[in-house]
Length: 338
Ligand code: ADP
Ligand code: MG
Image 1 (cartoon, helix red, strand yellow):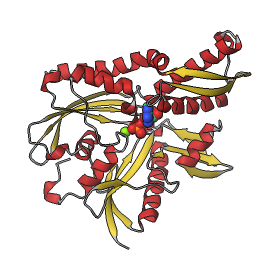
Image 2 (cartoon, rainbow, N blue to C red):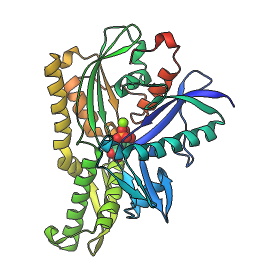
Image 3 (cartoon, rainbow, N blue to C red):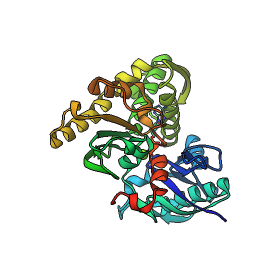
Image 4 (cartoon, rainbow, N blue to C red):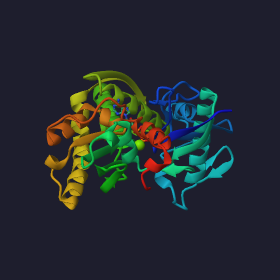
C-alpha cells in the first residue's frame, strides 16, 4: 500500500487529520463518520469502547461513562478514568484517540500513513508554527512578526513568532490553560437555566441540576454558542430540574455574560507583548487558531486592537492539522529545527 505523511492535531477538545493532495495542497481527511473534526472524547457504551463522535453522542444523552478534556491531564499521575472495565491515564486515552484517527484516515484514503507530524513519531511541530504554515505565512518575507491567538475548547495560548529564511521562529508564548470554550459553555448553560427559571417563575437558586442534566445542558449550550456565531438569537428547548420550556438566547446577552473571558485572553496577550517589548504596531499579522476564534466577539476584539482584520481563508480549527501536513511533507533540508 502507498505510504504517505500526515499532519495530526490531537487537540484538547477536537482532533483533525490532514494530508497533501495531488495538487500539492493540504486537505482535511474526514473521519469514519464523515466529519472533518473528531471530538477528543472516549467513552464506554455497554462495556464497549467508543471514540470520537459516538462518544460525544453518549455525552449528549447524559452518559457520564465518558472522558473528555483528558489532554489537560497529560503527565498527571493521579488522573485515572475507568471505562469499559479498564483503567486509563491521559496518555492511554490519547493513544486510543490517535489510533482511531489514523485508522479512519487510512481507510478513507486507501493509503498507509507512514509517519505523522503532530504529537508522535516523525516529529512535533509547535502548534503556532503549524498554523503559520497553514495560512501561507511561512512564504512571507523573512522578518515579519506574527501573533498567533489560539482559543480552543479548554485552553488559550498566544505566541509571537517571526518568519525566518526557512523556519518560523517562536519569540515567546504565554497562555491560560484554564480558559477555553468550555468556560463560555458553562456561562451560557447558566444563562439558559436563568432564562428557563424566569419563564417558569422559579427562583434560580432553587434550580438544582443532576450531574447528568448538567452534562446534557453543557452539550446543548455548546451547540447554541456555535449557532450564535452566525445568528443574532437562538430559540432552544430546555428541560432540567423539573422545568421544561423554550428559551430565547440573544447573542448580546451571551456576549455580556462572557465578555470578561475574552478580556482575560487579551490580558494574557498584553502581558506577553510587554514581556517581549512589542506594541501592536510591531505585529504584521494576527493568526486566528481554534474554534473559538469563529466567534464575532473575538474577531472584533482582535481587530479593535490590531486595527486590521486577522488572517482569513483557513478554518481556524483545522489550521494546526493542515500546517502539520505541510510541514510533514517539506523536504528534510527545509525542516525547521524543532
Ligand atoms: P481544541 O484546540 O481545544 O481541541 P478547537 O480548536 O477545535 O479545540 O476549538 C474548540 C472550541 O471551539 C469549542 O469550545 C467549540 O465550541 C468552539 N467552536 C467551534 N466552532 C465554533 C463556532 N462556530 N462558534 C463559536 N465557538 C466555536
Ligand atoms: Mg487546538
